[in-house]
Length: 556
Image (cartoon, rainbow, N blue to C red; front, side, top):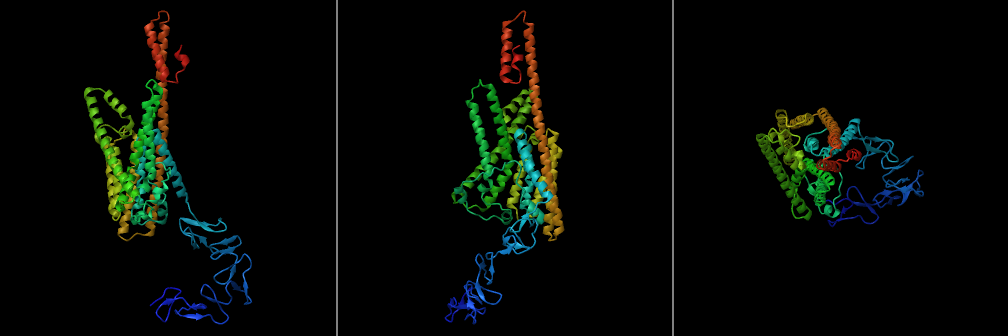
């Protein structure tokens, strides 16, 4: 029979502590301390009594004031576990550094470097290379530019396409492929996409405390992804809810404003249209994220807890909403094609113009795409569906890495072929932007195919790891720079276009006013009251609808 540490086996067969005044020997028996030695509370026999230390001459003494007796029987100005140097007490010995896991090491591993400036405790600090600094700056700038461009050009799907394309760098984080240390560090900073704004809305503490800690598959645990859908998607859900509330308030405001207040009513309607298109942009951009976190929780969910029941209910509502939105989107495009055909048969272009006016709140779904056929106009459906398929594959087939990346490559290739054959965009700029993103995604998928294949062959070398890791980091930085440049161009083009429209309207209205003034001068000798009243009513209408025409010119 073996006894636990600190106990010995008594003759009666019971494990017990050594009798008072004795200590435990290595053979498991108890003994008194040898002559001239004293038993200490730590179970060892030392030359001096408890609380004293041995001097160089062999005598015993109490530690000086402000000094501390250590377990080895010596005195130190520092507490147990600390080391004294000229700049104070440190946790680590000389030439050692404190690592983030609270251990002392002689050399800091990547991505940390030795910080000789920290005092009194020398530490390992995170290292940022020039490439990492460029990455962080370009990522932040690209995200900000995308948000601005999405807000200014709310009727354009550019923000959706940037966000969805950028998710590939989030998705590959969960591929079970051997990575270099440098890439592992970079993966921790790669975010989901560019569109949702990170407001860090805090979940109510009562709700958060009631969410049980549920284990997730290893690859997701490694990336610190939680099982709870509510925790993972809280920011996105609250942000979307805020936009919906703003949209509802604008709708109420429109209904409450009197129709004779034409100027204010027009402004509010324009804001409402922009908010509605922006809301749709945000929704389509996060569909992939929602599917990702929904499936992840459904894999480990156990109903019973009220927060889990709430999360499950929200998931069902969102899934139903996604299916409904795609169905309505498709029916909208079918209706557009039907009206277009009718307009062509009757040679009545006003039918299409009226359709675009009636559905200007959802124009981002179709306005930037050629209307040659339903296949051309359905590009947003294709790219969003692919994004959701990426999430489905990564959360269900994570044990089959090569199969996962093969599916990604096939989906990417099929969309590239579609872009080349159908060329769905009206503007060349949008076409170049999407084609650039798809080439980057294709390169990423090829690199991941290589990495997964070599893993399966058990022939993955550290040099190849480093090369593939650097390539992925370069591609990510390249994507950020491309997204930033495209969004800056889009912002500049949007501002320029808005200014030109404003200038053109101003010129047209001034021409109308000039024509009316000329008529009044011609009728000065022989005024026709009815015509004057007619023209004056036109002037009043122009004055009420256009602030940039001077009152003096109107009243000449």
